[in-house]
Length: 108
Image 1 (cartoon, rainbow, N blue to C red):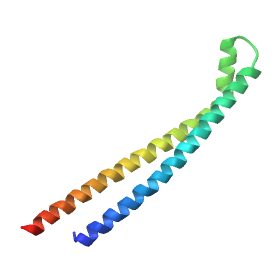
Image 2: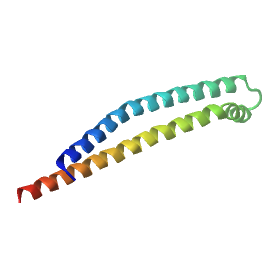
Image 3: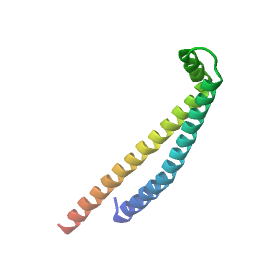
Image 4: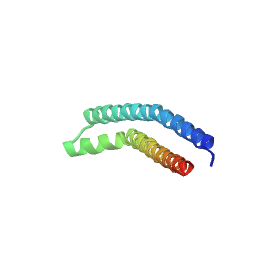
């Protein structure tokens, strides 16, 4: 691998990592919105339900099931972005290590 190829690869990985920062922000923002929707839906359903506290809690959980699902998907998206960013960071370290090894070989 040529030094120019290594530099190109590092630049591309760095660009992807920077995009990941924005993607993580967007995913976290969506998660916060979903958690807010879940809390509001569940609280409103609890207040509107009739019966014992246990009955009202169960009805509120049922009413908020779709909002809970959306929140769970949003959490999964945040986790996926974080995992992808860690993977890119590890690849950056790997390429940087190869570059240092190549540099050491050139000195010999």
